[in-house]
Structure formats: structure tokens, C-alpha cells
Length: 310
Image (tube, rainbow, N blue to C red; front, side, top):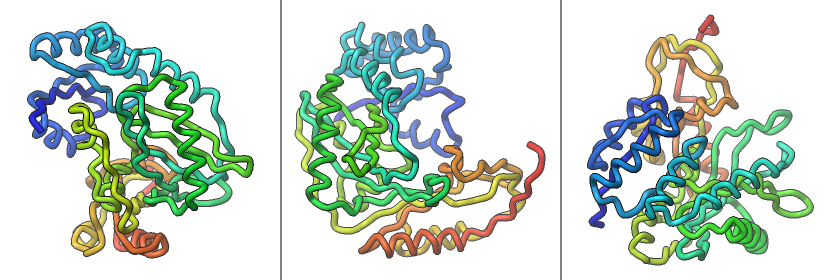
């Protein structure tokens, strides 16, 4: 599309298998400690000044958001003022919903203050008693009236926060009294949700950000199938051996898979966010079929894990 990109990452957050991909699409990959606020702001300012940057976007979350946005706003390069992100953080601290409430992730792309819903994705969980997240299904199997109510709630939150441009991922709990927002972040959906949207709808959420920077409104197709990501549900411990990844990768309905471990690595337990690094993505005509295909992929992965001292 004619854009040139400079990427800034914290080396402690950059996984080895992602680094070559980021370098490939970037003019330069700049590494800096996100915990060093002054250093991070300086990296943004130096890069913007040296290369004539037009826009600075923060695509993640955490403590680095406000320093980056504040510096970008000072330079006139952020489409949203810092107060927007401060409101997001305040609202998230105030929101709460019981763990057993079904949840959907609502992905939106905002352009000139208009919030366009790209899609809704349902959480898969272990069920009672802990309801640990085990994957996501897109599109969420919701009735039209349910979707309309959820869209209205999300639109109201984004408008109240003053959000003007960019992606947002809003987690909504479905309570008997109506939908309740659990979190709202100015970032793409986590856990490969953008890939699920691309598989189910043929809509590239990340590319849409760049078309929006050119002023083009997103045109989101209706879903033609379901897509599901399932995390490999491995016990905590030290990885001794594993097999099955090659078979999973060539299965016709598998659209993506990742197993970023080698022998000797420590495997985090189910429920730990780090356990979501290993996953399989499948497609299918129904939610029941995608669930079965995720279960089959999990069976095909055979791992010997020993619970020993870290």
C-alpha cells in the first residue's frame, strides 16, 4: 500500500520465531526496554524525527502504552490523545463479571470517531469450576438481537472514551441482566483472533488499519465458515519429548499451528497466559465440527512432560 514501517519492541517480549517476520515487514526493528519510560519516549522521538514518520500506533497493551502515546501526541503523530487511553484503563479497573459468564471479544476498527464492528468471537473454556480459557470461536454463535445489543454497548464505551482512530478489542460478558464490558483495549484481538476473522470472513484486520490510514472505510464480509483456535492443553513441567506437530501441520482443515517449544523448555500450566503460545487453528462448517477438529489436533500432539524443579 506504499507504507514504510519502523517497529519498536522490547527484546524481552519478542519471541524468537516472530522476530524474522517482524524484520521482514519493517524498515528497521528497534529494540528498547519498555520499562525505561524515558528511553522508550526518546526512541519514538528519534525514530520519528530521523525518518519523517507520519503516524505512531501502539499495537499492544501494558505499561508502555501511555509513554508512547504521550510522546506521539507531543509530536503531533498520534490520532488519539493520551486521555483516551487513560479512560480505557480506568474503565477496565472498574469492570467485573463472574467467571462463569459466557464472554465474547468484539473487534472494531474506528475511523474519524465512527466505530465499525468487524466481528464477535466466543471464548472456549474448561467449564466449571475454573472456566479457564482454552480457545476462541469466530463468529460467535449469537442471535441478531444479541449482536445488536452488544454492538450498542461497545459503541457507547468507545465513544465515551473519545476514541478516534484504530483497532479496539472489547471483551464483553453475557449476563442475565444484559452484556457487561470486562475490558476495552486499543489493540488487535489477542490469541490469533485476527487470523480467525480472516479465515471465517476473508477480512484482513491488520491490513484494514492501513486502508483506514488512507481514509477508506472498512467493508466487512459476512462469515462463510467458522474458525477456531485451540490452545494445546499441556500439563505444567519440563518438556522431555514430543511428536505429532508434522501431522497436525499437514491436516487439510488446519489453517495454522504453533508449538514454540524445544526439548528442555518449561511448559506453563493451563490457565497461564504463557500456555496460549502453543495452539492450532482450524476451520469448519459448524462450531461442533471445529470443536471436534481442535480435539483431534490435541490428541495428535503427544508430549512427555515431567514435573521437576524449574
